[in-house]
Each structure stands twice: as structure tokens, then as C-alpha cells.
Image (cartoon, rainbow over all chains, first blue to last red; front, side, top):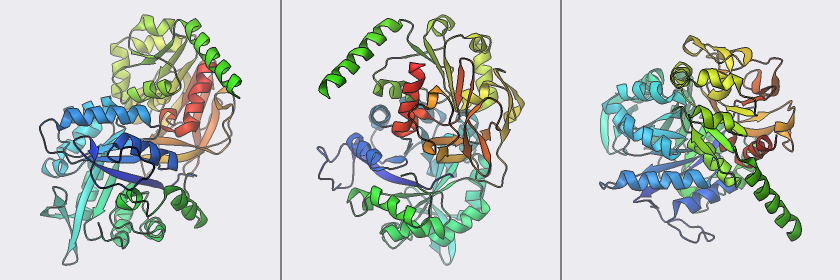
Length: 251
Length: 213
């Protein structure tokens, strides 16, 4: 049986992890490679690296990092952040990334999804969507959730799937950072209208939230950052609990 | 324990020196081939990424990876003359993911004619399931040397929208709504639908088994 995936997300700036990371065992708390190895050993199913570097040199630094991560770990990983061309994707995949995630660039140029999926295959193209519920309507937001658009979340989700996205990574900005649980209703609705796997993001605070996101939110995977970085939830224990609740996971 | 370990290392080194032809990973521009090379490095093995027919012919082991779309991958193989070479190889050959699918005679993905090593057709997953299948699923009904020391129902990482139905060459199955072929073998040709290079220690074990065939 296909299992539900647990995906820690690492924010990267200038080749280093950004948020304070509370790992006693880590020799260098800012080293993404070491952190990736630890998560991989603890049973993470995949990793996501989100590059938030804004400088000119970002691409080279990121490619170096991708290649180091690919050498070190034996589970798949996705790279996102500022990807807007076929050339960007080609270089990242060649450096060893398994998948790339595109977000604002897909909204600005939806044809990019078609171009990337026909060139590299849908399986490595993740479309990330940040959305916020305003007046009972879910609206897509750009640039890390800063800029609102009039685009309806569900229409956009359907469109990206039709254009060839292999997966959708949906972050609810209403839930992100609250630690009060994922946006399960919106996630379940998305699952009912699109046929590609959905990664839930935003709101993880407890093990129960993960049980809910798979059961009520019908998600295929769940992504979180701080609860893992600060060891509030240990991946081993999380997966054991999911298993105890009859949610299929790789243990 | 220490003694055993050091003799193991010695053995590894000496067999490495003996191999000569080494391990060739066919690089025809399809997807993330670098990962396979890195996985072999983690096993302490060097390999070359190549589309050179002579290097591929001389290699002791050939790995035929690939992610992406079938018809453009076949075109890339034809452009390099590899479509004629691969079916004639005599050494152990391991097709991974799209590599396995291209070893078949036909794929529904853009009506692609494959290499025809396995006389079976590749089909598309129906819309009743999420497509692509992405994630960790179990391999079962394991047969043969490839799976030595790997337990039934072990988890492997899969990413695919097309699949090979069960057939007489099947040496492992996976269930995604129904049982399909997750590994096949015919003579010196092996194929796996999952990605051993991304399937944690179990995947590395499988690669190690292949190198020992």
C-alpha cells in the first residue's frame, strides 16, 4: 500500500539553514547537509529545501548545496524558491535534485508548467500554492504569500494539474505558523477535484494534527518545519503514532 | 568483528581493481542520473556516466536509469544509437524506472515503441487513483538474486504514471489499487520500477546485490 509521506522543510539562505534549529546533536546548526542526514535517518520520507536567498550569487550557492545533499542522503528531495526558467530546472536536476517546486513564476506564466512537465516529466514538477481565505473565499497569494491575487485556489489547483504539475504543495496562510492544525477542509476539497498527490503545509503543531490532515484532509503528504527543527515532534514517534492510528506509513 | 570488517574492505578493494570495465551508467539526457552515481559512491563504487557505445559494451555492469517522458527518451537513445546497443548487451543490465519501461516492447505513453527486451506493454494508471503514484510503497513476491537479504513488503520509493502489468518476467510486485510489476528479469536484463538510489538502505542493498551478480 502506498504510504503517507512526512516531509520536513528547510529554509535556506546563502547555503545555510535559516531558522534557529534546536538539535543538540548537530555540530553545525546552520549546515543543511547535516540536518538532511539526520532527518533522513529519523525516517523522513522526503525533504524540501526552500531557497530564500535574494542575492545574485544565489544560483551557484544553491547548486553547490544541492549536489552536496544529493551525495549525502538516500531519500528524495525537492528544491524550491525563485525558479522561473527551464534552464534553472535543468541545472538543479543535473546537480541531483529529484524535484523542483515552482510558485509565483507559475502564476505569472502558467505555460511554464506545461513546458517543464513536457521537458522533464510531471513527476519532478511540484507546483506550490500559497493561499489565504478572505471573506470565505480562498485566494492565491504570491511572493511567499505577500501579494494577494484574485485567483481562486481551487480553480488554480485544477489548472496546474491539467497543465502537468505532478504534485501540488498547498500552504494555507491562515494556518501557517499557528500550530493549530492544517487547513483540512480546503485540503479535502482540493483532493476531491484534482487527481495529483497533494502535500499539505501550514499549521502543524501536534501529532494529532498529522493524523487529522491524512484522515480529514485526505492529504498524500504533510510538510512542516519548526515542529521538526525544534524537536517538538520527533519523526520516529510521529510515524509510530500514525501507524497506531491505522494511517499507512513507512516505518 | 574488526578483523571481519577489514577483510571485507580488502575484498571490496581487490574486486574493484579486478573489474576493469567497471560500472557504466547510461547518460542519454533523461532525468537525474547523477543520483545513481552518488548512490554507488555511497557503496564505495566508482562509475562513469556515459553515452559512449564502446565504454558501455566494455563495462562489467550497466545501469540504465531514466525519469521523464518515454517518446523523447527513446528518441534520445536512437539519436545516440543506443537503441540498437542496449538489447545486445551480455553483461548484467539494470533498468530503473523509465529505464525498465523502455526495455518493454511498447508504452502507452505517447504510443512509444520500446527496446523490446521484455515482450510486454506499459500501461497508464487509470484516473481512479492519484496519478502519478508518488511515494513509498511495498515490494512483494520477491524472486531472485536482486532481492537477496531484502525482506518481503520492504518499502521502496516510486514515482510513476505508467506501469508494467504482471507478466512471466515479474520478480516483484507492488499494489496500487491492483498488483503490478515492480521488478522484472530476463536473462542478463533486470528492471525495477522503484528508485533504489532514493530508497534508503533497502535500495542501496538492492544496488549492492546487482553489482554482485
